[in-house]
Image 1 (cartoon, rainbow, N blue to C red):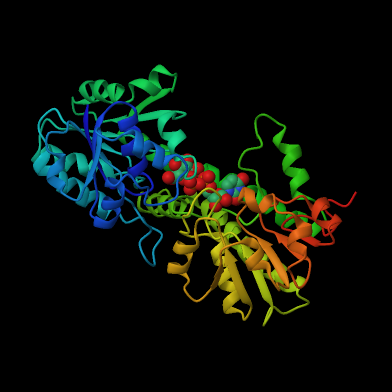
Image 2 (cartoon, helix red, strand yellow):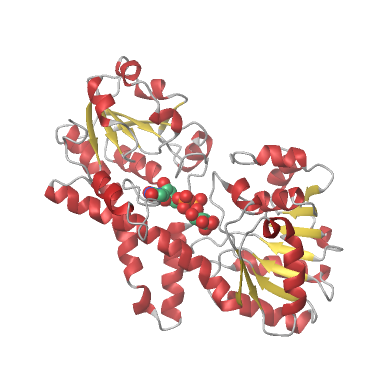
Length: 441
Ligand code: UGA
């Protein structure tokens, strides 16, 4: 099928390359000329494992351009643009989605299918549908939310764990269903479940899924707070409750909490939309989920201060990790960078390192110091903080790192290090939600 993908960011670039890998003829369109040039040269414009390989494999059936007219002749058009949080508000800014549809309008023919993938407040699709019906009758709209995780985006795109098709009740549903089932023929043949819904439900599914994940993380971080107050150990607690199959172990990782371009802004946007709909009470708990999450960052700084004997002023602090999670160079609302910046503002000499995110971090916080390796960052450090659990940091040799620091003290913001191993190498080890003796047998 001939497919256009509007927006080539973390979602759209992988989606375009994934569709080409699924056998389609794809054009990716973005307003950012630099991003387009890199993608056109087969280069991933951001760090995403497997994306470069997918781009290389797709030559011939995949191209990228800034020219909106390139969507003409395509029969399926995916909208993959961002919906950031509006400055100073909780609500999401859907203007890029509106602009994408406006841009597509001259290229749309009856029988075409426009597919929304962006995360939008419920009601957005209905407004876009009304516009389509007025200006391009015969063009179908489907809402097909995306559930890919950064760092696993290629796998999640090629092997989705479910496909949600939100169909409009305007007589186009049968045609749209047939087209989308052809687009996703391969994952469907592999057994990916397809859930068909109305437009409203499809938009809500995405907000609900991210809200549930955020709630699960904040739940375990709330337990961490109670553990800190009572002497309990949140890691053992999570292990124990996770054995109940109804609860499960995944997303019960206590620590510095969630960040990134999705969960924080999605729960806020969901609350804002529920408020507009008069259902604000239903989602009031998400304000607490947000607050618990942000408190972890403050607690991390407080713990660092305690470890430094009451003040971090003038102390050299090594921060391992700047990305919001491992296997990504994304620093949007990164808990690690947020802690680094707070400590720097409070007078510490902060040196940040990350395997992939230094350039993005430097653009966001140019006033911080950056180092290219953990050893360089830790040299002369009074305290080392692990804030993003990259494999190479988890595997660090505490003896080797111990040789370069000023003081062997580590704070594990992700409960990812083995306390016994670090203690055995002479380090003082503390973590969020665990007693000072955690790991001492
Ligand atoms: C999230 C969802 O997981 C995807 O399904 C969704 O498609 C995506 O948002 C989106 O809306 O586009 P992502 O933001 O890539 O994906 O990252 P996650 O893997 O969900 O992690 C989010 C944050 O939670 C990270 O900062 C991570 O460190 C943190 N986290 C995760 C924890 O603190 N504890 C955990 O146990 C798990």
